[in-house]
Figure: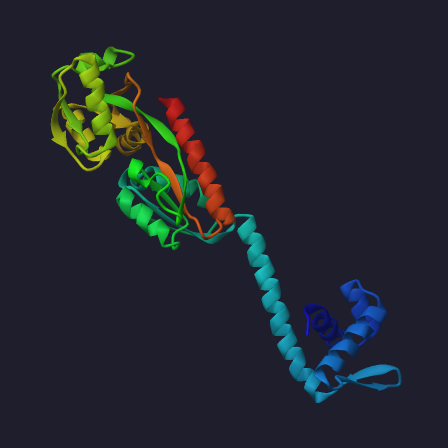
Length: 307
C-alpha cells in the first residue's frame, strides 16, 4: 500500500463516487480507478462491489477507511511539523555552555529566537569548557559554547569546532585615573594588583607574557575560575583585570545602570580569547541549531565592534 492508493480509496469512501473523488484530489477518474484496482490487487480482496456503475463498499472497506484516515492524518501532521521546524516555529534546542555566556548572553539570545514562537523549547546547561566538549562528544546536545585550549584543537573526531575570536579588554575601577586613557598597556598596570584566571588559562599566560615583554611587574592578587566573579574585585577598587569582551558585556547587562562601577578600555598588546561553537560531528544540525549558530556569531561580532 502507498499513500496515493490510500488517499484515493479514502476519498471515494467519503464522497461516494470516483468522479467526485477525482475532482477533490485534483486527479483524473482513470487515475483514481487505477489506484483503487491496484490496492485491491495488492490486498487480494475486493473493497467495493460494482453495481449499476456505482461502487458499494464491502465491510472490510470500513475497517481500512479507519486505518487509512489515521495514516493520512499522521502523515499530514508530520508534514506540518517538518514545515514548522524549517520555519523555526517549532522545535527543541539543547545548549551546553561555559558559565560566562550561559548566565546572561545565551538566555537573552535565546529569547530573541523564541519570541512569539511558543512551540520552541530550549535547554541551557552550564558546564566548564572541557565538560562542554565532553557532552557535545556524546552527540546528545545540539550546540556548545566553550573556551578551548590548544589541547583540544583537532583532537576529536566526535566534535566539529567553529572558532569565534574575541579580544580582551582592561577592566579598571571607574574612578581610577586609568579610566581616562583610550588604551591601557602593561606599563600602565606596572605593579598594580590584578585579578586573573588560574595560571593554566591562556589569558593568564598571555597577560603575564605581555607584562614581561614590556618590563612591567605582573602582580596577580586575586584568582577566580571564571571572568565574571573577578570583576567584583575591580568594581570594589581592589584590582584591575584583563578580561574578554563577552564577560564585559555580561557584566554590563547584569549591572545595568550601575555598570559605571567599571571602565572597560582596549588593552595593548592584543590578547585573544576564543569562544568556540561546538557541534556533534555525527549528527547533522537542525534548522534551529543552524539559525542559532548564525545568531551567536553575529552577536559576538556585534559585541566586539561595540567595545
